[in-house]
Image (cartoon, rainbow, N blue to C red; front, side, top):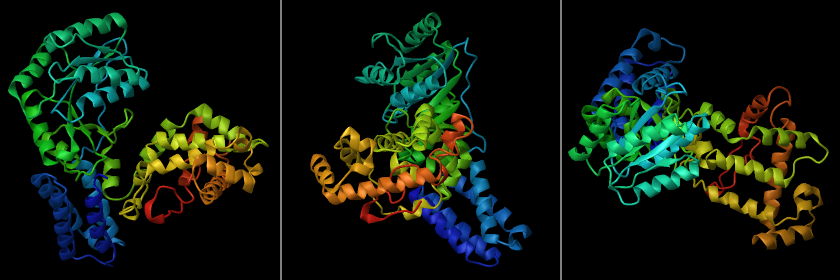
Length: 470
């Protein structure tokens, strides 16, 4: 996962600081030397690293830290605050006009950065906020680019405007804006041609669109896995056409994360969103403070709660709560629904990565989301009566279920034990809270300890038999 190596190195530095009763100036300088080395290895821009460590050192070698009750923790707090500032402090929103006007967004970037997919992700995100987006196919050069946008647009339930590949992009955009005005679309997202490198002809194409159409947002899509090159690309695009912000893609991959820490400081332009997966809903708002927490191994509980609230259907949550209160109780059909909700939250690995302190515990552990398929197969091998009333499942029924699912009886027993743990925990916490208040309050009540999710008493999918007591 992104930042894993950087997080490990920084946590080692902080561990050493916390072990000291008092800090000397030499201690701070040695710690900053290690921080500097870790950031450079993560491909953070050299000037950014130099300025960052200088600011932290100046604050840390102060009377407040040296005589503090817990000087190690105070240095960590300073590092966190300076990292927030480095990445922009405040979350930057898109410029969105009132609903009766058309907001125009131009997407640009190098080929392979995920621009076309990101355009569709953004369209879906805005649609979920009540907007009526229109995707515009202006990549007339890359084979199948138009088709890719149409397929993704269909998946998102967002219309795609295209005139094929025989018209100039600027003319396609003008026609698309007329189409949007006639059809009630209030967001126009332009997918422009990518490039393998900075190509002046294609850059001129973007400039022509910029100069002939009123653009409210010019967004650059950059691949986080390209590290320092991503920052250079952002600089180049900003110098030539002017960008309003950046979407950083593939931040879930094996990347060193330097781009996330460098782009704002080098270009002065904010990161607007981050791509955290290949699914069309894997686009997250970028929060500098939350990203700093992730990098420093402090987790990101706020984003985890938001994921849960967005993924968990309110009516379904209310029905599960009523089911728990009824004599019938919580059955395997409900367990399947809970598993699906966890999948919608990004899966096991995504959830665990946001929990404080989990990064180091997960090191070297294979978190396999596909392992959830086996419990599903076992449940689907049960009769409707068995799913509704687990207590009737006898040893002979278990043998039949195991045969139907293609697993050993021991695996059926393990899954049923896990289910029973989940059922007890959900019963003790009232499933979704205390049953009072709005649906939204009930839905949020599920989060403490994540006990309401299947497998949280000993997660399936963690290789090597490693288990985590949540």
